[in-house]
Structure formats: C-alpha cells, structure tokens
Length: 440
Image (cartoon, rainbow, N blue to C red):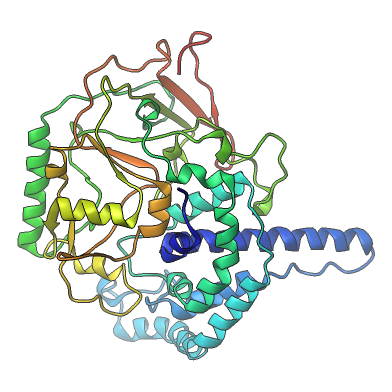
C-alpha cells in the first residue's frame, strides 16, 4: 500500500515535499507565460516574472522563524562575539529585529496570502524526475538538531495544509511513488563511498558485534550522566570503522524520467538520475557536496537477513515498545525543541528502540521513503513510554545491526563494484569498467 494523502500531510517532510512541487510548478508556469508573451509582443518591454507563492512563502518564513536572526546569518550572537562591544551588537540587531517584529504583527495576513497563492497553482501528476528532485530537496533541507524554521511553522498552519491537499493528492496518484513503500531488497543493497579518483575501495564486514553494541550503550550512558546529547539522532549510529555497514537500494526506472521527457523542474534542470543509481547518492538528509566520482559496492548476503521494516508510524511505535530505551536524560533539550512548533518542548519522557537488543532478533533495520516523509522530524507518541522521533535517517536507508556473512570483496571483475561520475546538476552516469556482461 502506498502513502496516503493524510500521511503525506501529517509529516513535516511530506508537507515540504508538496510545497517544493508547488513552487516548481509556479516557476515553470511563469517562465512559460513569459516566453509566450515575449513571442507575441516582440517590441514590448520585458516584464519581470512574478512568483506570488514564492514571494509569500519567503515573507512568511522570515516572519514566523523562531530564531530572531532568521536568514540574517551574519548577525552576531553575543556569546559568539565576546570581542564586540555590547552597543555594536545591539546596533547590528536593531534594524532586522524591528523588521521581524513588524512582519510578525502581520503573520496571519502572510499565512493567508501564502495559502491563497498555493491554491492558485494547478496541481497535476508530477513527472517522476520532478518528484525525485522534490524528494532530494526535501531531505537535504532537514536540520534535525535545530528548532523548526519559519517555513516549518508556516506548513503546520491548517490553511497551508488545506491548500497543499490537491498537491498531495496528485503525488499519491503518481505511479512514480510506488517505490516509496518498498521494503529492503537484500540483493540490491549498496555501500556508497566517495572517491577523489575512483581508485580506492575499502571493504570491511568483520568485527565484534558485542563490542559494537557495548560501545553504543556506553556512549548513551555517558550522555545520560551528562544530561545532554550532542546528536539527538534516533538511528543506530555506531562508532569506529568496524561498525556494521549502512546501505541503500537503487532507483527503479519508474522513479526516473524517460529519455526525452519534457523538463518540469525550475531552471530547465537536466534529468536528475538514471535507474540503478544508489539512492544515497541523491537523497540525503542535511546533504552536503559529493562527487565528482562515487563508488558503491553491492552486498551479497549469504542468507536472507531478518529485516525490521519501519514503513509507518505504527511500525516505529512497535519497535519502541518491543525494545524500549528511555533517553529522556540523553536526548538533549535542543533535539526535543527541534520537533515542536512552539517555544518550549512538552515535558515528557523520550524513548527510542534499543538497537543493541533489536540486534538479537534482527540483522538490519530499514526506513522506507514513505515512512520518512510521514514521520521524520515530528514527535511520535508511544503509549506507556512517552514520545519518540525519527531523526538522523535518510529515506530508503538500511542500518545493519549485525555484520553480514563474510564474502568476497566487490570488484569490477565480479560486477559488484560500480563507479559513477557526476554528469551535471544531480545526475550520475555509470562509468564502470569491467568485463562485458559482468553480473550486477
């Protein structure tokens, strides 16, 4: 079963994906209208392209941003600039803060303007590449350690949720989202590695699993003693090079535009990806620069792994209930604050799955794209345990809780090592060398 409209609009990531699509459609529509006007009125002056939704969104984003600096990243924080005189800091802050106060007085008007502009966008079933672009942009913008941005506050408003409903319906009607609910496919799991020249590869799938989880538990205990976590992630992040691998599947052909398909994304971007590209190349939470060459080695588990599938809120709640780990003292206040659209988080207990205990029953845990969009970066109630969250995950990411059986290292000769070259924009081209017809 694919993601529903209600699930998509329930998640902060899902709502942002819908808004990204609406903004892309507005820009392409405006560009098409401007081009048509230019052709029919050759001698007429060129009028600037108007983007009412984009303008309204960014004004509301600035007005609703809980951080008083907003997008004014050059403004100094007193604790970061002790060398500055207090009057200099006050002077630097005076004008933008005054503008922010004026904008916040009109917050309701800005929200209503953004909702009307969104409603004016004609929703349609998006092209696969457009959906992929929106998904990558949505995941890349996630900042799980920070308080919600103004745009998150905006997208939580009922008027905006209602305005985005036609977009969400168009998304769920697309066959290009069917893979969002797919489970982990053991033969199609790739470990990605960024390489400067594509010449080196490290393959390490051996280690002491008891030591791995003992170290994980020790780290949590130290954070609890300090009463603060510097990460706040709920993924089974472990430490050291001898930890189990993290893998991703590859893009299906249905997720990529057919050759020659008309561009629908803004700026006339080239095709985003081709089928068979590992999803981790493109879809990363809080993404940073990668490339220009990437390599990936394919796992070949010798036996069917026992996979804990996180494909819904209910599945996450079930994992927290089955393997509860109270992190109320180690899941830091900043991380909790990042999940709420108010000034202070609710006082509650916090729980995540105890991945060390889960490793006794499962070999790997996989988060589907749909569950990421519906659940990531929002509080999830776990009856009897308080609240939990999904933070620090990529969509379609698999964390291995145990080391897969030892196997022959991947190579181009055995068809399990592939190299991609960044082809411009976010497109990757497979440039793997090796014997013709090598199995992949």
